[in-house]
Length: 361
Ligand code: SAH
Image (cartoon, rainbow, N blue to C red; front, side, top):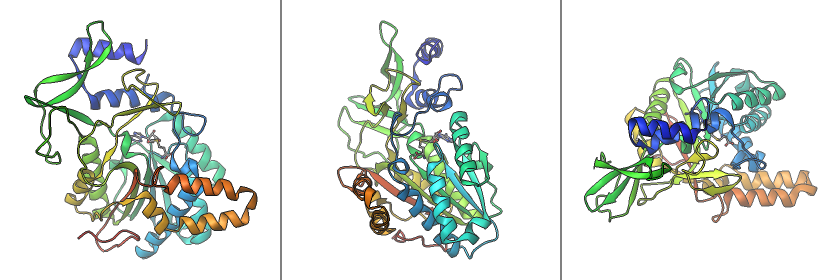
């Protein structure tokens, strides 16, 4: 049995399923899901993320977290949370930098890792042991109590949240579904009825346009906003996506061995993501009572928190690695690499003003 077979059975019994349900099964099915059973992160795996490109990302986020801790008035207890920590490399870098910059912050920290993947939890546990820190694992944000301030970080977590898709046809919006073709292979099909239209879609869309929306992303935005409003604190999300709802696009993407492939080709064997629509995510957080300054391009954010200075210091202390560090820096900030495609989004409680985000107009 494979996930493709299981999906064929589900679709044969229940009819075509939404793209969101397809993503959910591909990523999290306990027996066949990509994250549940065979996530492969890093250079040797399926995809490489910013903390794997360079330790500078985690280190700078560690210093950012120290500033938030100060702005919160150095509380006795603060929850340092990471959503979707992968193999734990970013948290290790965060903790190393924060320990030397503000040991009292680390003393006040309860480290909370939000993860659903058993194999990745194991890797995270190893990383935590190796760097000498204790952490607590939970599966969802609703398990975080609001009796202490929260500082939360996440890299490439939001893009895993399932999206639904709709296609503009002559007859209006139809939901894009995963069904079976004439010979029983997985294939995209359309709902017979009108798709539930979304306020964030442009009214004038021409036939053939694809729109995406994510009830999970919004619900998560509302949870983050609500938690930070109650507990106080700040959360930072780095991910690829669009600042405002810039037009419409089909951004469903499967990555395997660093190559893009047809998202229906090998369900459960590839990482499956979609670009993050920051606008609905942030408006849900703001409706739940938090502040949501405008997002920044990753290049702008990392430069503002000192990545060029950090690269220069690292390069001077390791001249043998200076060229490699320069390459890593370019990969993170260059406009034709990760610099513009990725964005930084901040959600925070009222009264905080995390740099380098400008207060929303
Ligand atoms: N942040 C890491 C890993 C990114 S991959 C890095 O940048 O390298 C996405 C991570 O989110 C994985 O750890 C995956 O298991 C986790 N994840 C995906 N969906 C999740 C969900 N619904 N709840 C909790 N964790 C999830």
